[in-house]
Length: 162
Image (tube, rainbow, N blue to C red; front, side):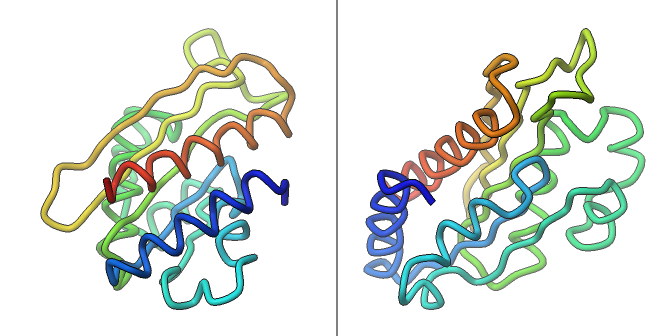
């Protein structure tokens, strides 16, 4: 992974470790990149509780309990699904904080209402309201959209413990 992200991930893990908190991830368009980045750091097992790669709609429903009718009505790339993914990851783990990512990384899959580069994030914490973040990165290329999404997921995890 890229050195600046690795340094941020190490600092993040240290901050969570000091507070005795654990993290879960639920990733769609990033395909596990956030979990991979975090677990690249030695000692991450004291903080990273588990990661869900819920790339398909079925995985979102079966692994973390996102209602199929919610996906059918709102689409997998939506605020409500991102929130449900984060809450589902929290509820299906022993974590204290869960971050979720769902989006259109491209180059295909975009529509007029859900263009390439649209990414929704959810951040769920025990005893706190779930946070949503929407980004419209634009058609930067698949690798860049996914990298930007990882950066924003780290930012959400950092904000959760400030």
